[in-house]
Image (tube, rainbow over all chains, first blue to last red; front, side, top):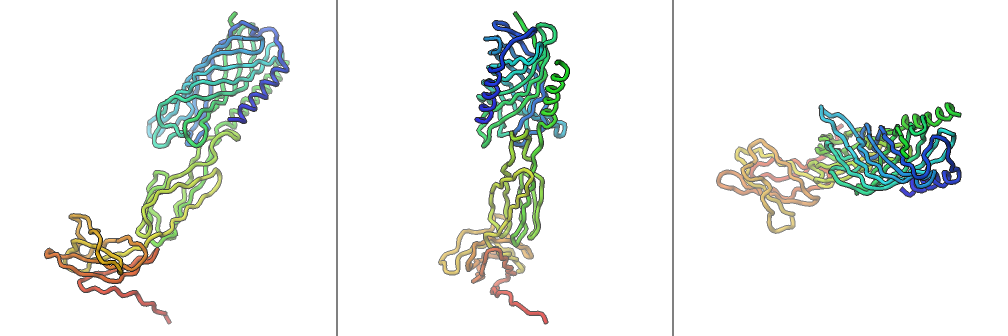
Length: 189
Length: 204
């Protein structure tokens, strides 16, 4: 976890040095909403192949580069079909996120993101718990990620994001999952 | 700029997705180094392993991405044999490695066969230097009928065995049965039986 925080801090510092704005990107006091579809995969003991995640987030640009916002989603991070039964571990992340945008071209930005909040686990599992999760409960955790955005028509954009989520389930090691997400974004005045 | 940079960034994400979720597996070998058949469970699977034989299985650890994710897992192993007390243990299985769990005897045993014509009602044991016999080792309503065998798990040492048989509850004692770890002593009982260690013969 410490390593993840260090990497995220380094990325944010890097972004701060190369800050700037360009046409077709959100600026201070504007709102940005993201609608994402993701491939989500648990990186934990007994995790099976991941599946899909649906997420929505909204943030306000505090400066031309920094946004603060909220995100919620539904991520199926482990899934297998056993004798006609869909065994799965789903997670609902409810997170506060800070994103720092770094402009690399007139219509293009990359961003780094950190956040924290609550993770509601919803297991429908067979014999083996995944990453020590075997009952529904809510845990506090964190998230870090990087991504890019391509603004198409002034106030709309598409992008992709790689996100790493982690929280403590009481198992010997931290529970984690990642999401590779494709986003559709809208800038609202 | 456009297309080249977008292509590079898109390629990075596709690469991340492609390497995502690598399965981690290890191999577990449970080797029966004991003198008797082992019966138990290995990671919730029932197994029976003959003496000197092994049970090999692949253990699924989980998914990982690069350096993130599990590289080992603890697997429960439990069971017993006539020369091994019931145990429950865990063995750490590491990714891409083979871990061996040896089952070693920790007690001895006596295979007590009733070769008499009457059923045995009770069996009790005591140390040879002890003064009183212990509780009945035969379950209620489960007498040892003629021609049947009952295995007694015993600590190392010298043991006397008290036999209660027949409807009149007649008593007989088998004295000085020597038990060592990993050895199985065979007693073919009839009233008046005297245990004699097997003699070694040298074939010419």
